[in-house]
Image 1 (tube, helix red, strand yellow):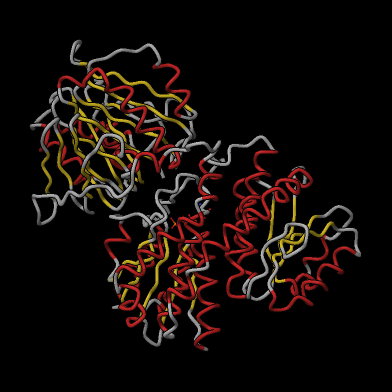
Image 2 (cartoon, rainbow, N blue to C red):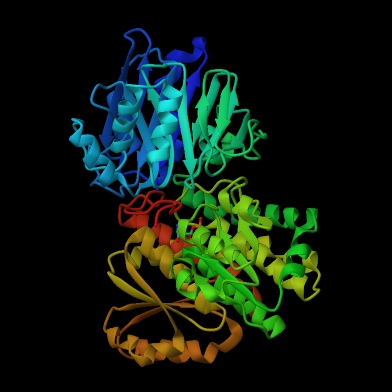
Amino acid sequence: MCGIAAAALRSKFRMEMIPLLLEFLKALEYRGYDSAGIGVYDEVNRRIIIWKKKGKVESLAKILRNVRVRAPIGIAHTRWATHGIPSDINAHPHTDCKNEVAVVHNGIISNFRELKEKLEESGHKFVSDTDTEVIAHLFEEYLKSMPPFEAFEKTIRSLKGYYAIVMITSKDPTKIFFARKESPLVIGRGSKGYFLSSDMVSLLGSAEEVAVIEDGEYGWITEDDYFVTGKNRRELSFFKPSWTPQQAMKGQYEHFMLKEIYEGPTAIKETLVGILSDDNIFKAAEMMDEHVVAVAAGTSYHASLIFSYLYMKHTGKYIITLDASEAPHYKNLLRGTVIAVSQSGETYDTLKAVRLAKKNGAKIIGVVNVLGSTLDRESDISLRLRAGPEIGVAATKTFLAQLTILYALTYAKVGMDLEETLRPLPEVVKESLEMSAGYAKALANKLYQKRDMYVLGTGISNFVAMEIALKIKEISYIHAEAYPAGEAKHGPISLAEKGFPVLIAWTPEDEDKLEVADEEFSSRGSEVYWIAPEKDIPIPKVSWEIVPFAVTPPGQLLSYYLAIKRGLDPDKPRNLAKSVTVH
Ligand code: AGP
């Protein structure tokens, strides 16, 4: 998944093009950071200039430090490689044979090979291994015989796959062409001009209003206007972004991840305000019929597992919970009510499951953080987190906000008082963070050189163990694996040996089972540590239902401090991206 952005600037702001594009890229970097690049139209020398570099945006910014260009239009890209290894030549923007076109793209062009062959046969020379480059040459080919917008229209009509594209040509240096097919794209406007981006967060400092480009729409922007077509509308519905630029900054924290861990209590509080401000949660509860399926990926999947467990405990009914990437194998189950949980609202696998479910006539309840995201718009009811932007690749505060919504949904279904049951949650998280922070850091200092570890749980803490293991894997690269405590003796305990670390995610549901697992491992020389009241990483004593809010935050801190101790960047872990909008 990549980040794309573009700006069409009014005359007096055109010397700001390069710093503005870099600002967009810095805010988009969480979407991928294998390479970065920008392309602008230099209106003095009347030509397109491109700078692009393997590595993070900082490397690109270094080579642009003393560059001054007056540019009416510019595009930018930060890459998560799908086709072609991360390299300078495979970085976006890509151009045509004559350097009269520049394009950046997020998604996959599934028919690029056949297009590339035909273009090479007609003499086009390709320089990269990417699918994206074919878009530039196709546009070049059509520009030979038609005006730019018609050529652009013909270009995108030739593409298969899914994409968000922004493209410029020196044949019309007033316009930036855009097209959206599944991959996210928003448009913004403000005093400086018009903008395009993969997400709203990056535009917060420049756009006073934003609007979502819908699937299948395309058009252009200029410094003071836009045109959109492709579906049945000509006017976009602009709105003021609900997030502020400050929310998308690190503030006094060294990393977004640490800031967002400590924003957990506020994320819950704000989400609770949202829940209580309308009756969506009750409408959603009403919509849940006899056949309910939850579908999600990664951390959102773990939140769904906790939801399914809690719901079963309260109603005796089981909510089938599917890992989104596997959901197509269960398409016969994707009917009735489908609850899709996704922070970004753009996860390809989750959206694919939602579309399969809709084909089966299912009603969709979305649980989503990003307003205007695809899931937000494709759900019959969208239950929105109010966690604010989450920039760190690791989901932290949004996991707790998702749980808040899912707990509210369960309690609404069984007629429990939402305010009374949910009001204490922020304080539980706050107290857990305060009690555990120093101990989590100390334990990270002990464990940071380990290669493998287990995280054991039981009952509701099984799913907390899975979430903590994911955090540790994705942020510190230590191979942490979660198991039900009782399951360990059916094979996993073969890894027990002197110095093998085991973390216990506590719950009061069956402490004996956790104690036995501790004994089984310790007696074989393993180092067993508990996230539990009055134990290695102390937390408040809570009921089994509240365990996820007390045990998860210390696990998030532990993964953060493990990464720091190992000299890693917790905000930009290798090979990952914040929202996986590709297969
Ligand atoms: C969690 O820390 C990871 N970043 C990842 O597993 C994430 O939860 C998953 O990709 C789902 O993202 P979504 O909630 O935006 O759909």
